[in-house]
Amino acid sequence: MTELMRAARLHAVGEKMLIEQVERPTATGTDVVVAVKGCGMVPNLANVLANWRTWYPRMPLPPLPAIFGLDPVGVVHEVGDQVVSVKPGDRVYVNPGRSCGACHPCGSNAPQKCAYWTLGGYFGYNPGSLDMFARYPYGGFCEYMLAPQSALVKLPDSLEFRHATRLGYLGTSYAAVKKLGPLADRTLIVNGATGTLGVGVTLVALALGVSRVLAVARGVPLLERLKELAPGRIETFSNREGGTEEWVKSRTGDRGADFMIDTLGAVASLDALGDAMRGVARGGRIVNIGGTAGELGINVKWWMDEQMELVGSVWFTAAEGMELAGMVGSGVIDLSVLEPRSWPLDDINEAISGVSSGAGGFTSYLVEL
Ligand SMILES: [Zn+2]
Image 1 (cartoon, rainbow, N blue to C red):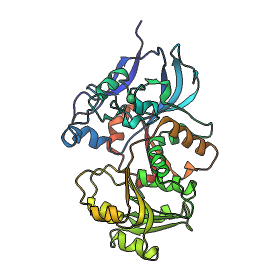
Image 2 (cartoon, protein in one colour):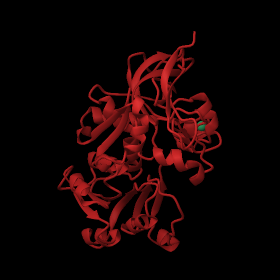
Image 3 (cartoon, helix red, strand yellow):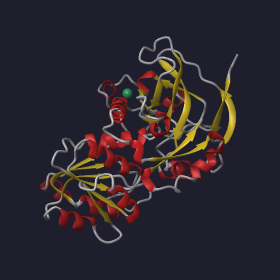
Image 4 (cartoon, rainbow, N blue to C red):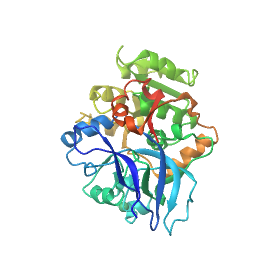
């Protein structure tokens, strides 16, 4: 007999999600069913639902009606007969990154380069993403979701579910910081430092030993709050008050910073990104994990002459999620500075529109089940 579960489904762009009874998945092979206890509410979800097909027509959404939900956490409920890595009762984060699992990039632990690369419960990057949505149709806004065992990150006991729903943004931040290389005696510009990704980058970079964070954002109150994370290592600047390049040079003996990570959101100004890039010193590395879109004019002579490295970074691997969970478990990263704000599944529509009401990147939004 088919068992049912509660799920929030979107039937049409522009409409509200409906709480409905849908078929509960069962686990076969190397797949796992997770009883969802919470799912992160991405600040960008309202943009995705309202604008994605217009902004990025080549990036498919899951076929409607769809169960969204990018950052699920929960308890393993049922495992397929070939699952060896987890067992029922394990507490897990479900990395929503999906890929074919069989190509050269997948075999090299670089699933983001796979032709099927997809963020389950959110959107895809390729036509092949539709195959991934067909195999794993459920995001985290439902009671039970299907996931491959390779996507699961076991959670340490000390990592509460309501903080673990932040692992997506923290993992994205972690993967970007890793791409910088060693951080000892290095200076990092975090552009958009008080947003969800910016706070994550700051927490991770401090934990991994960066000497100085030059934190750039708009609002002063949140910048002051960010500085409290490490007053001796964080300097802050509101780019409402002037140019980022000029400020960074003034703080680095006119040399510039070693690194910059851009975390600005979908509707941010490209001028702010370009300004922060010019604050990076010769031979520096710039990693972009923000959602800003558009054509950015780059002086290619500067790029070559100064040996600048420009790196794009999307999401993170399950292995990186495990490393991050380990750092939280051992206390290297303290998530108690974050404030979870949650809604029950029944209030999913209030949650989607409520994500701008908190303290920037210090607030973690989630739906609890
Ligand atoms: Zn692949």
